[in-house]
Image (cartoon, rainbow, N blue to C red):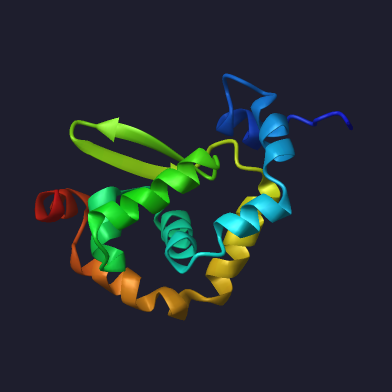
Length: 141
């Protein structure tokens, strides 16, 4: 295994465990990542979260126009695969890209998002119709 160069960006994303990205990189190989993204709902969730940086379950349910149990099931799979991380704030659960996600996975998501923004237009339109974050929380949660 080659030595890991710790850049400021890597330290910022993983301040408590500099080796977490190396461990995650070993677990997240292309087969694992692309199997996780092979489902339409999961890839849409990942791209929306990559675009917005953080979304709560109710925002994702509204954006994808799907039931909360279906969205939660797919989010759980993405979290278990360590593609997403979550945080609780009161009764709400917010999801973001895992802070130790390898750079190559972030680049894949960014490239897919940049090349396919129109593919997510219905979802981003529904999300935009919810208003700003405080209004979204009041409107859906």
